[in-house]
Amino acid sequence: MGQSASTPSARPLLSSSYSRRAKPPHSFASSSGASANRQPVAMTEGDATSPIGGASPARDHTSDLPDECLALVFQFLGAGDRKRCSLVCRRWLAVEGQSRHRLALDARAALLEAAPAIFVRFDAVSKLALKCDRRADSIGDEAIALIAVRCPNLTRLKLRACRAVTDAGMASVAKHCPGLRKLSVGSCTFGSSGIEAIVRGCALLEELSIKRLRGLPDTFATEGAVVGAASLRSMCLKELYNGQCLAPLIAGSPNIKTLRLIRCTGDWDRLLKDIADKVTGIIEVHLEKLQVSDRGLAVLSSCNNLEILHLVKTPECTDAGLATVAERCHRLRKVHIDGWKTNRIGDEGLIVVGRQCSNLQELVLIGVNPTARSLGLIASNCRNLERLALCSSDTFGDAEITCIASKCMSLKKLCIKGCPVSDQGMEALAEGCPKLVKVKVKKCRGVTPGCADWLMARRVGMLAVNLDVIGPTEQQEASLSESRILENNEQLIDQIGAVDLLPSSSNSRLPSWKTRIGFSTGGNLVVSALRRWSRGSSNSNST
Image 1 (spheres, rainbow, N blue to C red):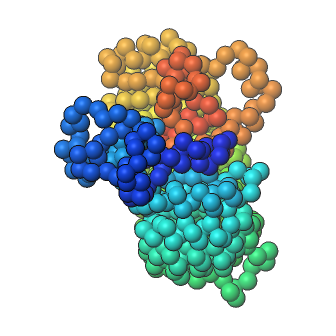
Image 2: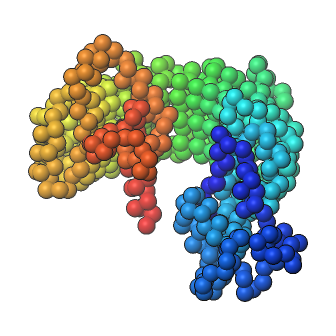
């Protein structure tokens, strides 16, 4: 609802000027009788809009607006504009603070002293982010308990690098914030007892994300494991040394719809069987850099409601595992596969996807080598396919793009990176794919800028083509180290939707010419573009 406010890490948490501005409105009443030049005086209805420490202005028409309307106006402003508005007058200061529901704070140890003043002004916070620099001392249990008491209406909490917070501090959060719905923790040191306190104390908890939690036990034991919660809908475990100790939490939460397991050590095949047997309504599964094989995929295929599947750098998964999922999960509409150039997933698995998953809307293939044999079947049978991306494929060439152009009647977005396509193949898009509105091409050496201009001209302004041409220097570097592209693709999945192709502010360092041709740093062109396309499609459908 409101905009986020953050305290810069390079400056003290509260400067002297901020302390004066952040003084709560009711404290002015204690200064009655003092002159305007020395101390603020008590407000009356007539001078409620007087500047803080300035002369009375002319007629202020905003004084006729109720506080609720003024707060509604503030909702449409950015964080910087809201801060400037809070300096206009005492009334705006009070309304802006009371209507701010989202807050981001530097969670250094000094926050303990500043927290009371901060939460007197911002007394309606429901979404709070506490982030500490890894080189600094973070807040501890006392501070997190104080914040929990001051924010009883908290629904979302994000903790980053709060290493001094223990299980006792998390128990305080669970006690004083029973309405918490979303918790995200990263690089913290409390353990499974803190997670259990949250799960037991927050009956409305729906989303739980745990990343690099260092307080988990070194060995997996079912005794004392965290029990599940019926309220949980989404669970994400990322970069956990012993994330398997939280498997009982997943298996004990029967209403989970989204499950993400990313870079967690250990063999997950057996645990996935227990999870799939007890949590049958899973809709989205994301497995990345995980020790899981076709046996794990086979047990996941029992989740008949599965709609979204991400297999990222799981070298033990083959065509057989993908085929098993496709044969039993006919509702699949989004499939993302990063084959890691292992060639264990290819035409055979994709052919089964094409035959069995007619509802497929989005297909992303990275480091996979499909041919016209599988892509043609997918294009013919999956009539709802709208978004297609292929990256670092050795076999996706002119014949494959021609096949796509002739058979994908519903395709709207096409993204190609590091594939052996040329101008000849791209020319097929001039007549095919009648609903195509956007094409993104990056690091495809056979595609020239002239082809992009010709293609847009042939489609009479109905097609946007973003082309990033690989230069001679990049060609030489690519020939020396082809694996660089594959390493960059790791960020394609990690940073889905995190970076826009177009800069969000004028402070961006990207040159304007790179912006026009769709340049994006970090190798995140394919998946970030598809995520924005997907969001755009869902928004248009909802309206």
